[in-house]
Length: 159
Image (cartoon, rainbow, N blue to C red; front, side):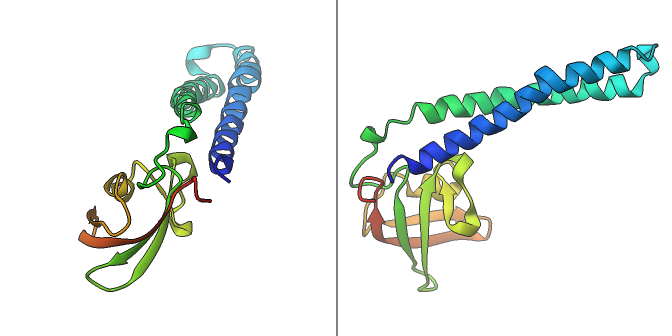
C-alpha cells in the first residue's frame, strides 16, 4: 500500500505526458505539413491553429515533466512514522462544530477533495504537515480560520 498511491500518480502523469508528446511529435507535424501545402501561411487559419496548439502543448509538457521528476524523488523511507506527512490519513475534530472529518495527504496529482484526498501543498495539507495526534491546528480556509484537533493519525508506514 505504501507506494501504490505514488505509483498510480506517476503512471497517470506518464500517460498524460505520453499523450501530449505523441500529439506534439506525430499529429501536429502532419497537420502543419498539410496546412503549409495549402499556400500562403500568413492567412492560413489551419496552419496558425496548429502552431498555436503546438506551442500550448509544449508549454504544458515542461511542468508535467517537472512534477513527474519531483514525484520520482519522493523517498518513502524518509517519510516520518509519527508525524503527518505524505500518505498520512488523519481524523480531525472541528473544535467549533464538533464534527469529524478525515483526509489523506497526497501529491497534487493524486488530490481529489470529494474523496478526502488533499494535497500536501494545499492550505489544509500545509497546515497539517509535521503535526502529531492530539495536536491542535488552525487552518485558514476560504470560509475563515478553523480550529481542529488531530484525533487519529495513520502514516503511510501503518497502512
